[in-house]
Image (cartoon, rainbow, N blue to C red; front, side, top):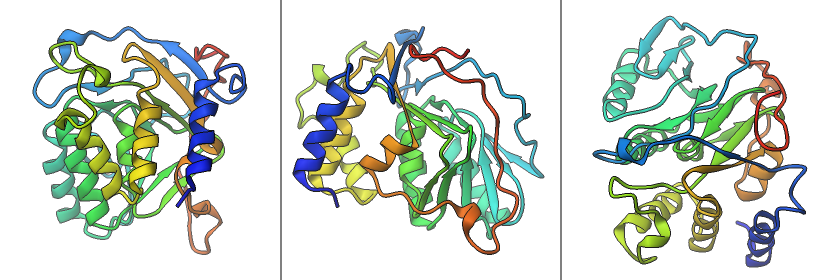
Length: 254
C-alpha cells in the first residue's frame, strides 16, 4: 500500500499540469451526454493509427476475442450484455487466465462494467496491456480488476469524469452519495485501501467528462502495483502487441 504522503504527492502531480506536461496529456473529446441510459455510457473513442490489425481470435464473445486456450483479448466497448458474454466465454474456454487489453474504449453500461470487473477478479484472471495497447475511461476499471496486472512500457491509459443521463457529474453529488460510493467501493474491492481508493477516484475526476487525462505505464505504476512483464516469465509465448503512431502534447495522434 502507498503511504498518505505518496498519494498526496501523486494528487499534486496531476493537479500541477506544468510539472506533468511530459508524461500526461489532455484531450477534449466530442461526447454526447444524451447518449447516457441505463447504467450510464462512459467510453472514450480515439483515432487509431495501428499498423497491426486487431486479432480476429478463434472465437468471439461480444468485445472479447479468444486468442488461445489461456488468453483472451478485449478489443471494444463493454455493454449490458458483456457479463453474460464473459461468463459464456469462460464456460467454453475455462482455461483462460489472462485478458490482453488491446483497444478498450470504455463501456456503454457502467453498472454492468463494474459487475464484469468483479467477475474478472473473482475468477483470478490477470489483465495485461501490451505495448501499444490503449485502456480508456471505463476500461481502466477492468484493468484494475486483474488478479495480477501487467502493463508494457508502450501502454497508454486515459481517465475522465463520468456523467449521468441527467447531465450531472461526480461533483454534483455528495461525496457519500451512491453515485460516488459505488466507485470507491469498487476500488476497495480491487485491493486499494480507503485512502488509495479515494485518491484514485479523485484523480479520475480531476478533468471533466468532455476532456481526458492521458498517461502511461510509469504513472499507472505510481497508483497501483504492477507485476513484472509476463513476456519475461518463463514459458510465456506470443504476447499480442500493436504499433501506434505517437501522441502529441495535446493528446492527438501524429
